[in-house]
Image 1 (cartoon, rainbow, N blue to C red):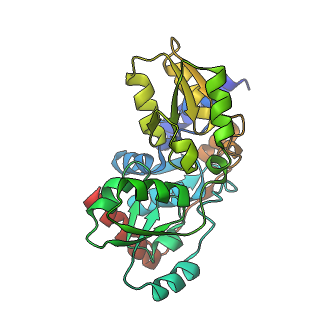
Image 2: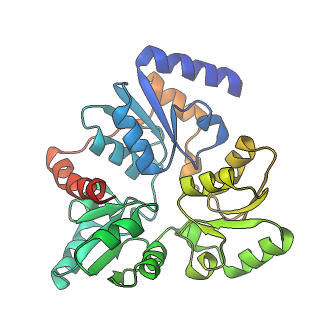
Image 3: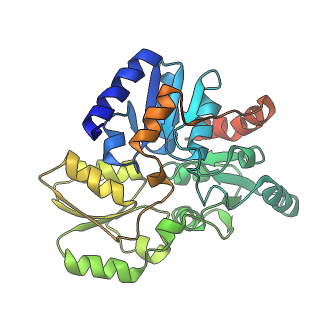
Length: 304
């Protein structure tokens, strides 16, 4: 099959099998085009909950599919490519954080959404990159343990100086590899372009940006701005998607290194097989795990 023919077959199968396809914004263009919803991880989980379909296929990584299952426990949730994981989500586990909680019992544990469901069971509140500042500021406790991304945590710390935020060494290896040297090189090549970066980048990159925000916020900013040139400081796919969305504007990746192999692990064929029933992996979580993990998710919804 050609890409177009495979896309058409996927669209047909979606209707036949009552399937909703979710694609994280870092997915390739051929997948985004056949998805019912595209966006950040938590956005997709909320969309899945309201979708009428009985089955959901996540084109993203494992923690995202788990979050969909948490919010839609009555639906069948499939991860299109079972090997698509997230290094950041896997950096810390329940045993580690439980031990740290015993050492610092007066700290509220704030977990970035990019964590496993198992780890969320021992956390107090969850946050997304777009809601982290608002939620941390709203917490009654001034002592905060922010996990796992120390770069996002440092960004929050700067925005909410009244809080005592303890950070652990962890984060996104893709965003963290970008340096000030990359920023200077990109600005030299594109002196008229505005720099838009994700808060998972290191502090000196964030400090030199014209705008800092989640993936969706970056895309919204670029679309609404009167400027016509942008350097995009997040996964390479975003510059590509923006180019399709706004062909009269120019988008330049901050670095060729901003590519996530886990996000790129999912192919259009994986999506086809998951919908057809010959591929993918169904996400299953125990009732106990879902009940405990929902505590920090519900707290996030309450505060954010």
